[in-house]
Image 1 (tube, rainbow over the protein chains, first blue to last red):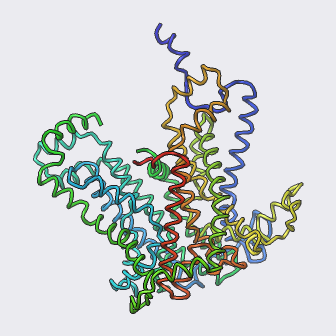
Image 2: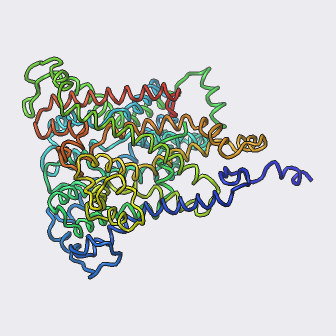
Length: 298
Length: 317
């Protein structure tokens, strides 16, 4: 009885743009899907074109054909042999920077995030606002002072330049913010239980809270890895040694050196994007949730 | 959250803070992150201010105080004015278009449609690539014999030809269309991110509101403009802020597209490109620091204006 009466009041109420008002519904759906599919094509076609072009010859690369004629690995070969620093070296450099930056952000971010979410100490709120406030400071304002600081610390030459870039990217306010938000949603009972079992604050943090925060740690890791892997500005400012360059810097240089040698250029573009693409395919949820959570929700 | 209530009540009549060990643990955990934030961010602003009022050398550091000389020179510099003009033009186009497109995509993807997950993933897709990769790709597509002109040629009617653009138009190589092309590039790559911001906010609007509107006989159009749009106010503020800040900081695409001069003919010269040149081409660190301070002020004022416009504090406060 009750369910039958309640049913009309509680239909599937997902926000349905097309279903509100029945007239012209199918027509509107048609337009909607055409737009969606067209827009989705706009997202994929350029990348597909890139991959196709990397297997073309130079004269073929400006022809509007979808099948390389003849298909060749020349572009890839040139990308692997003619670059300085070599493609594997660039790849390694990007991996080092992105790997370390991911670890420091997860570690430092969860430490600060947990303290700001749960531990009651004087100055907690103002200090948290101060951390958030740093999001307002443009990187470019920090460029000259940080460059001077890095010179002062001796991180501006040789392999130590990795250290310079990593230092600047080691912790971002977004990481702290995301993890604090997540820690706040974990029920307190678990901490209370740990406390009763005699665990100190660090043990509770490390053994109880961190494992519970895995989804947020994942989102932060993905977000920071992507940011550091794709990062252009700080390596450009700090890495005067060509051998230390990550992929985006190398790519930019080849764009100026290769000029219009499209197949090798497109091979580098493909390879530079591939790791993030794989991450995106496997961990799409983390990308979407990380981005969304860094924006809204208070 | 349920457990937070009693716990908080309890602390109020003992102490607002935890015991000695809890306080120490708190400071211990934030020590390293906070030190980095203080030195690299807060410290940087102060340091930049100091550098900007001295004659500052790469190796020697401070030479002599020059007061506001850098700022005066900056405001009368023609290239800087060109950079401001470019970035303002860029922001005026990119921000509204990005917001509108992001909102449109979010509303559609939030509706009951087939392949919802797929479309959501697809629209965010261009944002995963690095600015370097995507800009090089874009240059390839927009070159005179590129895919873009190729598609134009295959269309029965080419609206761009009607506007006077030759079939083999060099989009990035022509001063009048270079900035517009970079605008298109960034709208393309970041509208997916804006969509995700809007989507998160859309999902917080309760279904009852829509149900009530439906019962009152509101149609789709009215529901959107009278309910959804005003309720998204915090999201508008956030998206607008992120978008404006991003626009004012235009650099990677301009540098990769037009080199350090923002070629052709300074059409891609941006504030940050100008700053970068001052520091690393002319080795004029104090002048570059002054440009950084001015950029910060512009961003700060823009954010304040938007706050007035949307009448809300940022969503995280």
